[in-house]
Image (cartoon, rainbow, N blue to C red; front, top):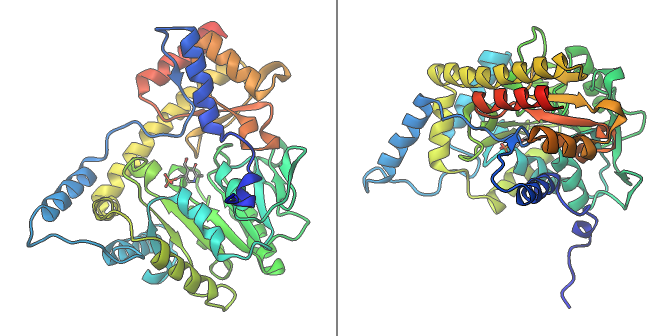
Length: 402
Ligand code: PLP
């Protein structure tokens, strides 16, 4: 009998979003013809910005002619896109990195998981609790953890995030080797100040640890002085890997494009840059050339303007949700520098009970906070990704029926 990968067997059954989808479907079967207003998954809904769509059309035209057709590109990404990313970091974050620190990918989620493969299974991961599930699940599948017990995996250092620390924990007391951080945070919508990030960089230097910083929502930051990139913090260039995405600012959730920054040297050693390069060359044939043309356009002056307008649309949705929930007395966090509104369930309800109540009474689907970790219990996440009219309808329905 062929044996399954033991590490995968440790994964807790049922990934969060399929379970949400299963419950919505079951509800719809019980209520035929009723529409569900979805404020659950972080999936973009608005059209691609025009200059980005145009660039991708043009690329298709080039691919349609023998003279201008191109096949496989560089595994690390199109040189022009890597250069554009470097210039973007320089111009907007005042961060200087060489082009070859940028590795273009098909998205931040796969990079957040795949990056595990260049570290020893003996490395101890630390994650924020609650957190985007892929950090924990890839740690489990990568064999970094033991059994699931009492709401967490043995072998993971959990960094509890709650209202008392503004959902941005301090670095842990315990030793960790790989510290996953995500700001603006999914699911809590929290951002970290310069001082809070500096504390993590100092911790990393003390423990000789590596930070894996997920900046997928950096364009949602509007509060002055909040860093958009971990490399804005002194010393981060020696200890941090950063993962970025075009999904949430350029609407590329379906197009698929992201990047990972691996500095040429971490603590003066080029091992991880070499290994990530090796990993990408061996297991990845490069991101779609059509998507990469869109990425180059997204980083142009015109593209940036359009992306920020798109982000502004979702942020307006977030404001409508935040104000609507607050108006009926619900305790809300986030939704200012982020598309997510982290909401405490009323009357000490559990996350899934409040999920069911919102679905039953207001026909609105959200995401139960407990799916993001033990500390998420008692919260739900509202997502601002939706057409404005659906967001308004959902909020009216919640206000009327809850
Ligand atoms: N990182 C975070 C924190 C996310 O919330 C998401 C998607 O919801 C991703 C990464 C996925 O990004 P991508 O679409 O580039 O894979």
